[in-house]
Length: 138
Image (cartoon, rainbow, N blue to C red; front, side, top):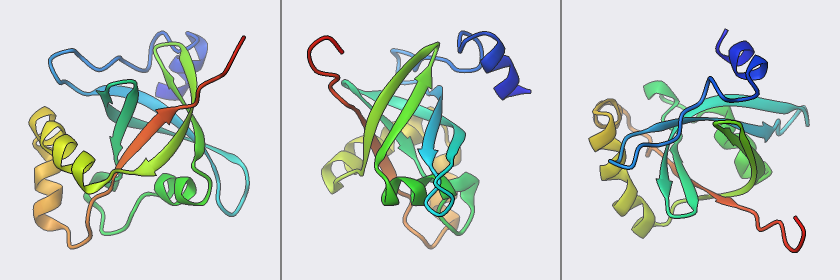
């Protein structure tokens, strides 16, 4: 239903911009399936990080990484949709410095991330989605 509402409203309903007070926003991430080559769409929480967007590959606390993160590792070029705006992005795993800065912001926005970290043995990836510069006239 969430996806149908998003499509029917052109993205005006179904995603929300991150709040200026550090709150989480919601977006759709479109990756390319690493084995199928087909587009895959996933709803995620995010934080703004300057012109970039940061997401967490927590997989709702599961012991394995989410499929979308595997897709991004195979093909880092993706797209995000937020509040009716679509951006092409390149993804990378947050550096140690980026993670040290961003992880506490995720935990402050939602204590669920701290709970996931306590019970998981795998590291939880923080992923940076950097908008691709469209260039002149783009």
